[in-house]
Amino acid sequence: MKKTTLLLFLMISLFSSAQTTHGIQFSDAIISRWPSGINSMTGKGWEYSNSIVLLGMANVYEKTNDTDYLTYIKTYVDGYIGTDGTGVTSSLAQNLDKIHPGLLCLWLYEKTGTLKYKTAATAIRNYLLQTGTAAYPRTPENGFWHKNTTAYTNVMMVDGIYMASPFLAKYGALFNDAVAIDEAAFQTMIIYSHVYNASNKLVYHAWNYDKTTYNWSNTTTGVSSQVWSRGMGWYMMALVDILEYLPTTHARYPEMKTALQNLCEGLKNYQNATNGLWYQVLQNPTGAGNWIETTGSGMFIYAMKKAINNRLIDATIYTPVVNSAWTGFKTYITTHTDNKPKINSFAPAMGVLATYNNYINITPTSCPGSAHPHGYCAVLMASALMEYNWLKTENFKENNIQFFNTEIQITIAIADRKSGTTTVKIYDLNGKNVIATSSTEQNFSINIAGLPQGIYVCSIEKEGKITTEKFIKK
Image (cartoon, rainbow, N blue to C red; front, side):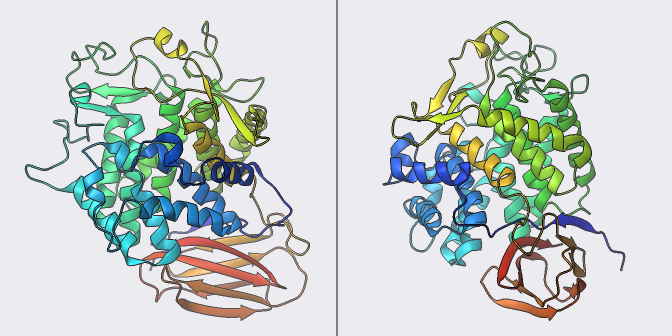
């Protein structure tokens, strides 16, 4: 059998309890400020405004194992699904913004193995992909409308890709659903074919099939006129998250990887040389009245850092880009009146607009200080990758473990030459230990040929130090 090797570096999941990162500070602040749940801030119910924050918190949980974060996320989801996982479809309303919380259902199924979360996720998947008179509305090219309202007739937005396609891709990977995976890839690339601009290597905010319906729509191409920072941020996060779950043998994998590389190049070219960040209208950094927009910037940090970690882009080129951006991003974090952190200078919730002036005349906001949670999402997503980078303990030095995942084996390569036994255990999503082995060698392999396709957790322990990471058997 020919092996297709994916090189991943094993990320840290164990760190000093004394370490307080921005991810921890913001997660704790959110729970303190809205102890009854994130919806007490937004009032949006089952919708992305809540789930984007909680997904960021979930990423911090992956590095901390703080059960307060798990409980906070679980309480939100449990408020909308029955004990048997039913009832969630009544909240969906043919609106991609309401598909995004499905990612929390999948995450909770991974963490708890509780069947109701899988049931709820399946109901969301079926709602989105059903056919017949109740089918979700699509353009004549089969792209999902962002919402089923007159203001969005035959309209696709880059925002909408993040709201639905990563959910479909992860669902497909978890449950071996090729239809869901294919749909995620299709939706992601059909809008790319319209809104990607090869001259600046950026994606514009939206596209309208009808071309003449809306004042923002170019009458020839149907494309909107501006590259909105957060809109492109949503799309970048979608690409890198989908590529995590898309089989490398999938027909659309190469073009999606190329799309990600193109957009990273575009971002590098438009990065502010002074603070490392990006502007509200991304393609016009010197335009009068343009301003630094931190949600798009945080999302770009997340997407490029994850792309570096997963060997999708050149680390030599893009690590300086990401590090510069993260340094600049942290200067926009201040202390609120409650002595907890505050993130500043981001766009409130907004739709596609007609002109440059429309975009830059939007007043930037902060959180807390507004009921717009997008800033929380960006800082949590970026922090989860930038502040928990590599295993750093007394015994395990930086970059000491390489995790080689192939079709049939995992190779553990430990750079630290200190003697001792390394124990490796692999668990399925139900917490069942399916493989366990120990070795005193610095480099050794584990045969995973007998494992079904799916997502697993690999735990590596040496001298009482434990690190874990999910991997996908493709």
